[in-house]
Length: 436
Ligand code: 4AD
Ligand code: MG
Image (cartoon, rainbow, N blue to C red; front, side, top):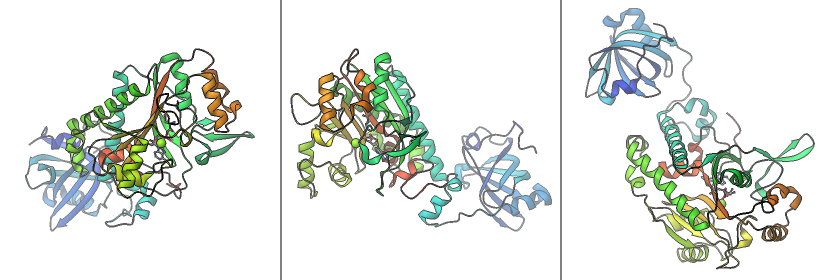
């Protein structure tokens, strides 16, 4: 058998019943195996599923049987045989093998059962092939696909901002600094300011790119490098902005629940949790949220930022996302527009995901008038020179606009019901992890 031949079939199509009683060839990795006497069961995995293959010494020959029984977990193997429906086999089908050949035997696989979290992170490059991480990565892809599908259908353009920047977007404390040929530069914390530039030509735009945060904290929801979806819309106020976010989350949740219930179930996630996600979502102001959190035992004072603990108290009994609006102006970024109807607060909202997952989106209406922006830049002690290009947008054809940032891994964590954000990205970058 030639491993590069084009007549191999995928296990998924066997499990879907397309090859019953037919001769097929499969290739993949040994998931597990056991032998008793002249019969070996090799469970083989490819990108579409796992298949039990029964290798009889009589049928496969001495060399074939030797290849099958000497294979390690994760050895690469090719098998040829007849597909048989069999209720006892996982997936309901079994391959009655006639030919077996190892492609690459390799060495014994270092990951066995019950390894520590740290060991699995050290061997992440090997652990990514596990059933669980494979299902999570497929789900992550699908969630991103439905996000793009949504923005495409809403008439948005996707654009590419720089990742190396000269100025902060979200304040100095979480900047990764680097030397840019003698100048100070940073890995971008957010592409928002560039997304705002893009609106001047294309009106409705989004960026889907990494953002970097030097997060010294170890939490279940912070990464130092995460993927950030940042839509920005010309001629949108904050109300329209929130309605768009709601519609987007409903779209993705419904698509996942309807099209991928099996995948969700394989991860222990009840698809009904996502099927329930329908608008309208609850809206509460920052001050109501703080009061509610305090009444539930939170240790927070009015005027302080709402943190993970408060968010958990606010959302643990919710089954849909919640908007928290009108945060105090001084704890928020310089670009958020003050609410004329509620001075001292800004026209912003965080979206908190239910079941204690907490913040997944931060968004706002942007300051679009020159004087107002210059005043806020001065108030926050920023250097206008660093933002000359951003300020220019308020000089040449200014217009009301709004936008938001969605953390992809936070969304995946909620939608799949994961305990920790690190499993929502293939190679998590956290405070003490740079390898693999
Ligand atoms: O709330 P943030 O900091 O807002 C911004 O960066 C705005 N400029 C976005 C915009 O309006 N275009 O970040 C937005 C979202 C958060 O709600 C969260 O989902 C995610 O980015 N996020 C993180 N995700 C993982 N790890 C981190 N360290 C994150 N920091 C923020
Ligand atoms: Mg935020």
